[in-house]
Amino acid sequence: MTSNQIKEVSLKHFATNGYEGASLAHIAEDVGIKKQSIYTHFKGKDELFLQLCSDASENEIRFVINFIEINKTRPLKELLYDFLLQSIDRYEKNVSNKFWIRTAFFPPNHLNELVMIMVNQYLDELEALFIPIIKNAMAEGEINLTIGEERATVAFLGVLDGILVEMVYGGPKRLKKRLDASWGVYWLGLSN
Image 1: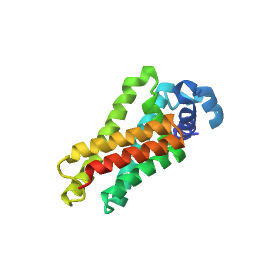
Image 2: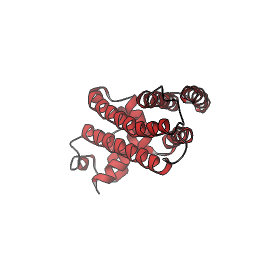
Image 3: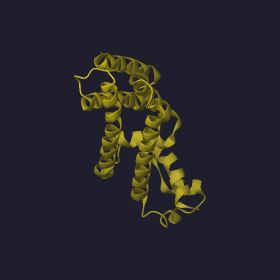
Image 4: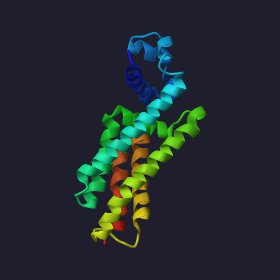
């Protein structure tokens, strides 16, 4: 039994049930240990939860870095739109991503400040990763120069935020409607 096994099982519990609904007793049972054995690896539920937050944030940044590296030669329109589609797909299929997004929207009250520090660091890193991509597209004449790369990036993250809201609160129909409308208006604003 390792801390990684505990984290793997805990991630599923927290992603499905949230902080309040996840029980260390149920986690221990699913790992095949006694609840007290969790304390050998983690001081308690809070430390375990915060470690999962840190791991999930790092996983998401790695995903973005890999996505950009693989797609950096594609036209910006394709790259950005595909990133939105990949974000939807990851939420549906990746438990770490689902945990991260749900935690960002619903942090436990007593851990709100610590979680939001991690969320804001993640958003700052996301912005820093996309600014050069958009700046390059502007230099190539692919999009309007007058908007500026930082503003265009922040607006793109606003589109992503809208998509995330519908992934959590809406359904597939609302998500598609939000994606089509927000992406269409965003790209129209960037186009030359």
